[in-house]
Length: 274
Image (tube, rainbow, N blue to C red; front, top):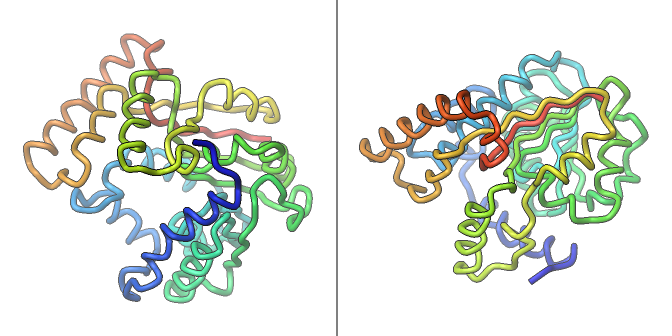
């Protein structure tokens, strides 16, 4: 069932509360810890490693040091803190005040509190930011949550400077079978639709966003390999790991031979310049 912004905030405050009691070592974040997290089959980040590795490559190709970065819907701030460690001036934005509290604690532990600020706000009203305030906006699993709110797309575009870059690592929602499985899993968990899988980024959503940009590149990832969702938490098993790698190799061949299948992938990296 649909939820409003207050209910969504409450949901994510509850989710991020689990990190408030995490140890200092567990909250440390920099490029080294980030890469280690997405490369370790025992880590939750491993499931999206291709998505995150691709996004990371495009981020590191941007002149990070000294630029003003918005980590859009930052959660506990992994991406923004990593960019802060590389010299960026980072604003962490999230609907959840609890997420921002955790992220700012992580900034202090990671030695970048002087380059990082946190803002708890609704993405559909970013009046706290000036026009063209940011050189780079990054969002991981973000826009598919905010696109349903009137004004969110326009606000995102407004705060990015002309010539600035938008980089997104997102779900991709054109595959009806995959969407059905995603939503079924979420509903079995008893969670509100709009807090999870009921809103997925589609080509029409991307078109509405990217019409505001001078150039854009859309890079779909994981077609057969989206069956990785069935193996969540079991990637350290050698058989599971080899199965996943075989599916990823099959995807590379299949998507090269039949490009129209790309729109049915389950994840996507978007790079756009305003």
